[in-house]
Length: 498
Image 1 (spheres, rainbow, N blue to C red):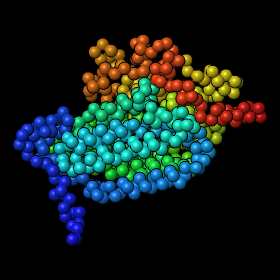
Image 2 (image 1 turned 90 degrees about the vertical axis):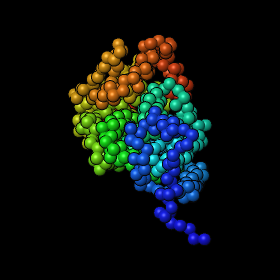
Image 3 (image 1 turned 90 degrees about the horizontal axis):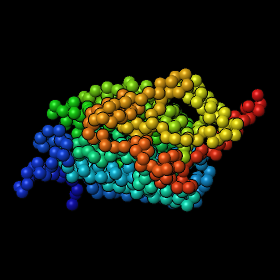
Image 4 (image 1 turned 30 degrees about the vertical axis):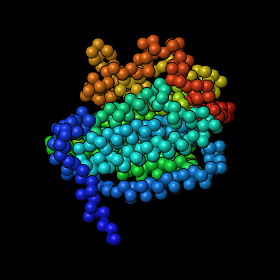
């Protein structure tokens, strides 16, 4: 018997709204879970997902993707990519797996919430596939680094990170819990799939796959490419949801959700991707700077997407763009200086050639960040690495959970943006972070940053060693310079020649 074309039956098959007989519609779709912003159920019927697929099609395509990813891994099982890769590249893998693998599992729960409580049938249908996507992503990104665990204990943090109090893991959990674990279905559609995935992770995975291929790590490139194709599909859940909200007079509510999500996603993206691109990636593999990447792939795309939907650019848009020049450099310096508190080994990335590249891409780098690195380099050249190690903890932003930092040297602009709320003094890295807190203080007020816990006496002994123990960093896991300080030899040679 001839099969009908999908376009002839799809809309009918996925129109699964019904009138309940034994409970009220409000009981079936409680607002606390749906977050429909007061838009009646019938208004959501116009939701039209741009990417349509059926379950048989989905399974067939996913089977091919898995076969491709696992086949490449098996074919390269005996390659020496791990041994031959630049230590900076291995650090990118470690930081990625630890920050992302279980984040994907959390996203599965978020997709499940949309699959059950989404008001639009199309949203529920797409989220069902998205839920399976995210489960697949978590499994892949736990399985692939597992083979490296016997060679390097830091790879175990692909699974371990989210189960610890390590500060970067706290920062990731705080952001992800806010964006999609503790939100309603509609909020998740907007904040996770539109703002976070469409705007940031989708583009990041494209760039990361290309970087992996350039570095010769075809296993990781295949893995990330396989994941990105899933992301590009279920990331489209949010756009139609925003259209429904805006067309029903909920633009202000939608705008706030987008503005909060972009601000929060930017912080995580900045500290995870910025240092990876401009410092950990070997110089000869860098195709563009983080700033160039942000301008070309993130800013331009977001501006088009937001304006096409009828939304405005976030009020802080220009402030965020201004941070492209310096924020990730500040984070990189913090990551390297507090390297014992990491589960990966950050690459300093400041050899003379690297500094020339940084100065070219970020004019003024040598007079600002370069001056701070000069002190570090002088101590290392003089044989005093202990002077480049932290003795205490930094001030941490109560929103991002990332240390407060900005431009040192001649461009000094490091500033705390405090807020006194209900008798407690909160500290923020920028006006953006403080504004997010002010939108819903009760949502964030009870959380204590790592430094708050330190000052409250929860970390004992009250020193860096006590903090490392609290963060569950065991011997062989705590971070150090990725290249074993070998890059300092270039400066020793230069000084000897002079």
